[in-house]
Image (cartoon, rainbow, N blue to C red):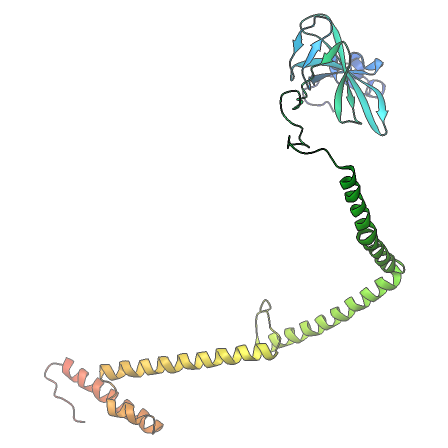
Length: 299
């Protein structure tokens, strides 16, 4: 099956030519690979710093781009070293820049020279970064020796013992990894067994009372009991407060007389019957008043 947007000539043989590039005798990278047989690849290269051309002695600014001939010329350990050969756009001269993996920079090898732009504070009337005080006295050799001696003593008394302790601790934990792993797995099994038992008890309790499975049950301990007791007392006080408010509203409306509310604390059953009789009488009275020509019922 032919690919989209591709023309396969009649004499094209897939087993023989493998690809259209090999059929036409071209490389997949096109004109960039015209020197690929020499190990050179044409790539876009941007100058990493300012340079002076060695042929026309003109200044070329940092960031100017060229079609450079990229070539691998060696290795620094496992990092390849590449060279970029560029033609000056102001003349016909060539210059070459190489990578320097050791110092993580670029270096000019031929055809140009790099513009030195390192600022020296001493040459410009300033002071070095490490010596900001111009009135500072020269370094005392005895003071320097004392500082080095203190550093050596600190290393011998503090740092080396600490490193030795850490090394011995690491050796202790790494001597028998099988035993340590066995102890850890045993503890994990015990904890897992306890967790499974707790989960089974919770599931049984949820199933008994029809509780949702997503409900999280807490463990019954002293803190939980104290908190539950406090919640119970608070709910009890709220219920009593609501009951008092309801009775006060009934008293204001007139459904329950004040004297019966006062005596309700002594007689529970009598209070209920009296309140029902009074409510029944009030309903009958209101009904009789709403009917025209009806007489007031006898109590």
